[in-house]
Length: 105
Length: 492
Image 1 (tube, each protein chain N blue to C red):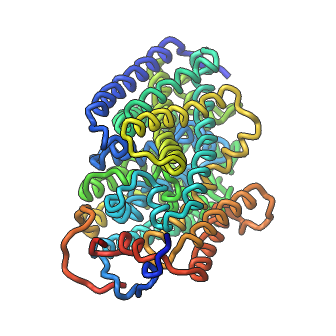
Image 2: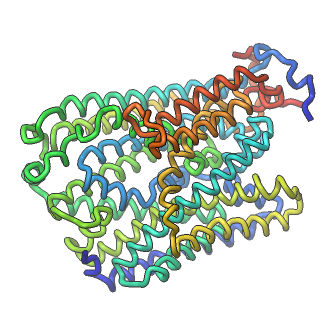
Image 3: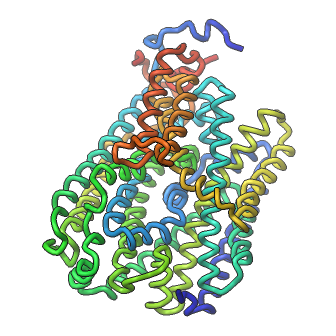
């Protein structure tokens, strides 16, 4: 089943579909956004939630650290909306499409 | 514990809910019977790749949010404290994360190779490796079955407590509805039901949350009272930052490691609809996770001590609110459980048919395929239903490891397979098995080394390293795979 010519290629000679380049870029953006969210949430919550809860300050009836966590989540929702509508590119999902030639990775 | 305050209205609303789900299923069944036999598999498993925005939103959201959303998570928010609603926020953007990471790439590749499942993508990418196919199919079958058993018995026990029906009757009420609509309607039946269930969930969550906010108002005084009794319930420091980080990773970053969550990538119609599903889904899931899980924590101010923390939400609904709300909450719980089970059953069914049966006995006869598909789907749902009648004690062990094990084994082979050309079948196998074994050893405390984190982080770490190293030490993947996953021009 395994043909030798199947392994006889150079990755630099493969013409890469542009849509896959877009997909990769968007995958990286998604990762970065979710990682930033993770770290921002942890840093803010653990910094403002330090100490004895008896001495907590409250915002709108909530412990301040929890309020900030909700606020960050809301801000990220706006950021995500912006990224999806303005940064992400709609592409055709046809299996094979004509496009300008481009040399691979 | 008294949860039976409103038996009649609970039973009535549960029956109305079940009839509506079945009516929707019947509608999809008729649409399935119009399908040409040749397209049967494609219509059954991926809806002919024509799913609109709302379906994609709820396929991901309700598929991933299970019994845990209404029972387990609020229960942990009640018993562990506010740190739990905090880490659950990590899942808020799950639609964005799943579709952003793999949506476009899988969508196009799936159309190139006519993939009908997560395993189809993995298997093709890894050079039709039998080992990849069988390992993923078996892992999916075993772990997902355990997961369904847990969901079914959790839901049925709740139904038993709230209505006074015997456990087995409650279980059958739950299970038979699912079998009917998954086996006859395929993913189309599941998806229309899922949209309906998602709306029921949203409505019941928002209503419950608003009522609870009124109950605990003024909130600051309530929180001060909670702090008086147990300050840990309000501090994030109950968990170390490292442990909270690992929960954020597990709930947020690596969701594509769960086959039933990533399936929506195979079904959407076009990227515009998919983009809308990403942000609408993020809004919906944020609302769910914030409101219902936080409500479990706020419940402390209303009910200071509850024997079974998992029942905090139903308890609040029955004891502090009008009877019909209890019924609505039960419908919400049923929605969450049934939509998850349905999504999982479809994944198991595809593993049984496409990865197991058809590789042993290939056939092209469409009539036969249709018959096998229906039988496999019924099997996928009936096996856990039977186990759930009397769950064996060892099962708890499986359930504990089900989701984490699947995620640790699939995340890297899927992600690297899609975006790093050099990954090959040897690396994938090493990564899958290594990830799962490491996760089980660490989480089961057979190995004491966990970096102070949830076992999933160690599992992912080992899996990623193995996938990369083993791939680099073995031959590169064949050109036909590269052509499909990267190439611009259709190979001859």
